[in-house]
Length: 182
Image (cartoon, rainbow, N blue to C red):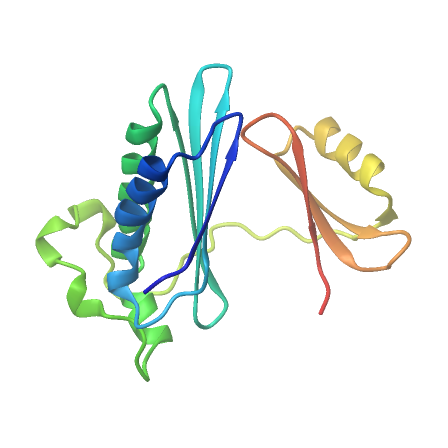
């Protein structure tokens, strides 16, 4: 049985809503022998009902989905569909990664996978490679640089820690920071 952390932002998490989240989001656990603690954040912002789900599976893999609609229950249903599409799309690679067990490939029905999402087992194709010097700077300068080049992310070396980090623009218009480290 999977464990859940269900949090709300600008919304009260009623027992009925929590049960619905656990029932619907819990569907993704059937694809794996075990999963870590599933985190669900329900947010109401400017009339949008946003659901963010993170499902950690063994091997350091994170499944993540986010959906926003005008109805919380619809957002929950759509985020579960999104997570299942990710699993369907990555079926071959997940099965290869979990050779010794842990991924239940037989649970992924073949007929539900649209032709465009089917994988033939080939590796991802890298169509472009860029090489550049990762310069030391602080987070504020990195965000400024990202905005100047009109990208959604920017790789930089933190001038304090010397670690390579990434700043990125979130879909809500704010910024995020990914820090490297051990």
